[in-house]
Image (cartoon, rainbow, N blue to C red; front, side, top):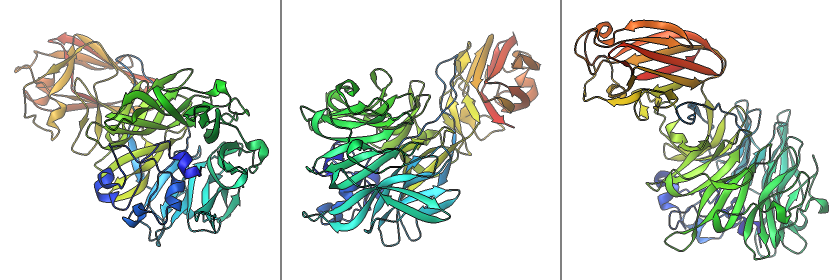
Length: 560
């Protein structure tokens, strides 16, 4: 079985075709039942004579590689929400049309691939604002799937040599950029022709899958800085073949392997160990599962079949987190999801389909899956399709649609936090996202019938407010100094003095007997007050009624 056939069993990420750029997944050749086709990068590279390419598609699936992220967590009022992100378009090679971000290393370098001016796919390394074409092993195509903090990038590259069946041979590689020059090393095989590297840890251990002399594909893990040899073969779960997709610094490899029933099951090895029955991570009730990422503590993410079937009789699958037991992470409203990366805090990135049938990138944390499209600042014109990696600084890479083209993106977290008090998620006229009411303790959400709020273009932010005799917000922040802006509008009382209240930041009173009606000059008028304060890990904003109850419409927190 060729690695493309072996790897097609996992539908980690969706296919990208030239015909799909404008219509997204709707026009992808081979798309059935809303499932991203499970052809691998290897298969796309070798199907040079296929009918799919004849239909105009440059076929590729993008396999995820994993790094970690650490985002703050929260206490009162429910789980913490995801922070906001600024998006960067990583661009393309000169004359190219596509790019995909597949992995991000601890120091911010991004590995992936892009097309060049002759429509060839090339492994790429984005670092310090520069884009490096990593070249090939003699052929025309290459793809990067993993990277570490040492600047080592791994993937597969074509050799320009055909096997007896007419397929171009590709080999696992390790690449480094030294003094501006690319050094590409062929990592070899297990005695066969093909190999593919999927991940690399900070010690330089590489994992992937390689063909042995019998033609079977086996998961491998090299020695630090080494190549593939007989000792690298990790075995299976009783079947013929296996794939290692990720490795942590302890030397624990994660991936999928055939069992005696020739079902693929997610596995995790012991540090430096082989695949064993005790490393079978199980499923979500269905026949198969695939591990795609692992963090420093050995927690694993991926996708697993459920017992439920789609209309064609195929098992539905969901992203999972295995942290002692396998648990489903849910979806963004659709029936399928897949997790690609996990961090030390068990925050997870990947893709999910939505209730509308679209495929969107997600961030899962604190028990909640969030659509990353709703966390990007500004009206950017992007549709984020899949998130493939996240590092300890919280930066996320993946790919999305921008102006009708597929582009690699980098999301950089901001330290800002905005809450639409008492109301739903809201995007203002500047494209900034205000989270649905969260992090509160006490009070109640109040709805007002006013539909015209003066002195603002963001009327919808004031139609619902949090009110009560005493309530507070406990906002998760990093230690530092902050600017806090509170937004108000008196939408209930029509006379001054009917509502007055005190406001405190971290226990220090900043407003006393505040009368919104009097300060704003009437009913249904927007008003803001801005303060500066220092905070540790939590910024507390407290409201206490003097008369008529306290009320706040929105809270905006920005670092100084």
